[in-house]
Length: 374
Image 1 (cartoon, rainbow, N blue to C red):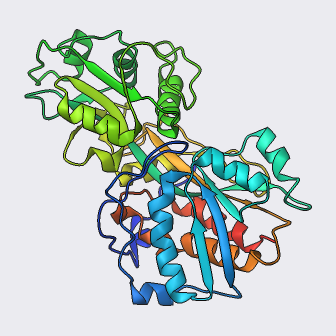
Image 2: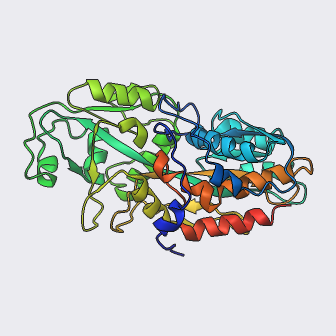
Image 3: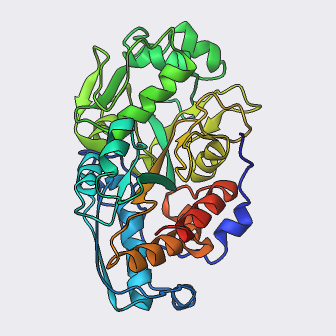
């Protein structure tokens, strides 16, 4: 089923101004950069948090993609619910899922939904139930470039694929010129940069290429970069640094790392090319399909979206929790915290902090599911 576009006004009510740009980074060995901030306390917002019977220590681990958002949420939540301590390690999606299936944490964060083997493993620790995916944070992956004299650049999926597969080698190539008839494209070598480390950013970027132009991107995809050629850099910060200092460079990174850099507008077939933005990412998520069964809310992002303003190269981070069989000593705090971060106030801080709020239709289902956790 197609999900409706979110109501931006509703999600921005009670928004928290967070100091600094919070970096949405990918799972695994992704870094969170130096732009993070945990935000200033907002008394009115904190007062809206329902602590319920929450108490004690809550351990969690997983995607570094949401680490800065979690930190800001924890600050608000624990300011109101001072009987609770929350420790989110942010050691990567893989580490988080492993810790969850081994019963070491109350919930985990992952920018990929649980696969069948992980669901089977979760049943060992979720007595009478299983692990489920709750989409909670979204964000755009920007494609940044460094081409002297070119302030605006439009690319489409086939052209991007050929650039990153070293099939298009010069910035004045006819395929790029056709998309940018008014640009003065130089006779300059293209220097494509990709991640050297295994990365959810790479996984989602290549999923976009596989979905939209399979004839030009014939790799299986995954967290490890597979195409030949190009140059590698560690972490999104490394890619951003190389692109910013290398004439002719282009690379993919989370939006916050592209601050102050030129960003590609993607020709999706919509009425206008779309640049990376939190609003555009939310619109793309709204065009996703729920593919999880039962209480699982795993999403299939429509990378082929042509919705106006929807930015297609987008990732979603899930909170993974037992639908049944949660530990009695952590269940109240888990439900209270998840209820807060899925609330209008919790989601409201994301848009101004470099993250994409989850659309209304989806987050409403998340809230209902959290209420039924046992």
